[in-house]
Amino acid sequence: MYILVINCGSSSIKADVIDTQLKKSILELDAERLPSTPFIQLNNEQIIYHGDLNFESIIRYCLHTIKSRLAEKQINGIGHRVVHGGDQYSQTVCIDAAVEAAIENLADLAPLHNPANLAGIRSAKEVFPAISNIAVFDTAFHQTMPKRAKQYAIDKNIIAKYNIKRYGFHGTSHKYIMERSGEYLKQDVKNLRILSCHLGNGASICAIEFGRSVETSMGLTPMEGLMMGTRSGDIDPGIITYLQNKEKWTSQETEDFLNKQSGLAGLSGLTNDMRDILQQASEGNEDARTAIQVFTHRITKYIGAYAAIMSGIDVLVFTGGIGENSADIRHRICQGLEFLGIMIDDDKNKSAKLNSDNDVANISDENGRVKILAIRTDEQVAIALETQKIIQEKNKVNTIPKIPIAISARHVHLSRATVDILFGKNYELTEFKPLSQPGQFAANETVTLIGLKNKIENVRILGPLRPKDQVEISKTDEFFLGIDAPVRESGHVEGSPGITLKTAHGEVAIKEGVIVAWRHIHMHPNDAALFGVQDKDIVSVDVDDDERPLTFKNVLIRVSDKFKLEMHIDTDEGNAAEIKKGEEGELVLSAKSVNLHDKNV
Image (tube, rainbow, N blue to C red; front, top):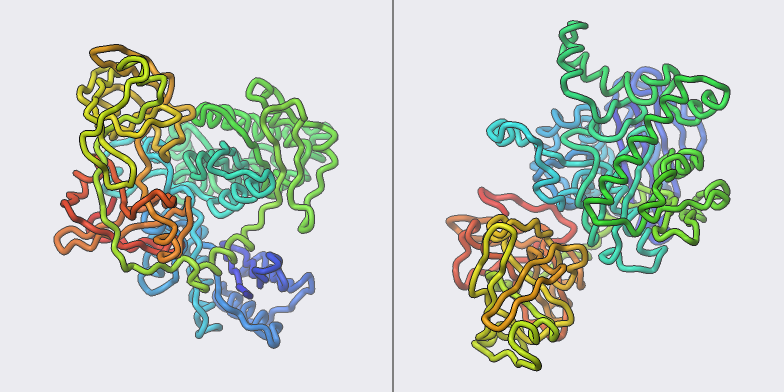
């Protein structure tokens, strides 16, 4: 397929035609210094522009230029980078009038980006009227962050009124880095704790656990987090009001100061280009040295914080213009992180040169526990591949049959060793009743869960026995017991909290195993083939209830020849959604936006 990828910024346009089979660009257009003094290049050949000096006219000219150079090649689809998708879009979406309106309504949260993204969409529809336009959202990858990572500590009424929360950005790049890391290391990303450091004029860090974003440094807008080229990153809010009072700035002047006059450019007093700042620092410029030290210090600080959140790191990745190309910056960031298992090989680091043919460099010391990689990100290719999924309808599913929805109450899975302690040596569980999944049963035996704050009695054990102990509870149970349980796929209990289990016969304190089960769908391989999905895919499920239609997002697909088709949610979600016995859901495209209704989960 040939996919035209359009990335419109406030003063630039990048448009590539991507061959998705080769995963390479066959036509590259870059336009900068827009709209006043446009400098346009097509495959490094300068194109002279003589039209009106407004953004929309220049975009249309660029797209007509691309169209004229394609000859017999047919564009199969157009993918647009859209910075802010808010809560509406957790996945890639085919653009219609409603999507355009949503992008426009979110412009207040990304004033430098969403209006430009929208201008690109409307120009593409005009120049290529017969071709589908697809939106790939920067914020989508971060929709999986837990609520505690999204919330700001401000008045909840203000939060609700303006939908203020941490959305995160650079999601397309972080997702691409996650997938490329797994490919390079030949490991399932679900088994890796990855820290992706996207360092460029815009910079952010993303903590990725079990293939999902669980934390990221940017927030409501791209200004939060790391120090960047011209953005301040994290700042004491008191400074903002202090400067407004002292300088008599308007809100726009304050935003321009933090967004365009701060960061590397502000501290160095020179430029936002790290290459120039490193050169000046080597020649003794103290301001340049300070800028570098603050930049790297903040990144190191975030790495330590995110390592704590994930209880360790398996892979540390550097990407983006600075992350890919500056061995000096990578070295400075990794200094002092040996206690986390992060040990960089200076020779490998200095010799690492990334290009389209060699896009990954392993710069780890062989004695270090953490793999340190420099990876050449390619957001254009990533957007093209996401667009291709929609165009080819690879993820389109047959909504017949519908999926039965079951509420999974709190329960316990036990190992042989734990049953021996709680009930006696070689004790065998007895069946209370069979479960819907073949071979599984609810046992007559129960245990008491003893947490830090309270206990819950008569919690049912499910059989048969498993290799690891696992306690599945709801969020309400979590707070009642005083346990901070992560949302996890069943079977993945590494780094989860422990709990005390008690029966009349015995008592045992398991070291880990307490989770809130990630909502999931059990499928037989025949079901997966019918729906067009695979094990570990993430989908959405619509429940078309006349009184209360809703959508469950981020639903995990689990495929096994031992499974029967059924979706499982926990008690809290079932109560909140008012799920009735016999309720059924319809699978939504895993690469399509979720259509939100009056209520959603």
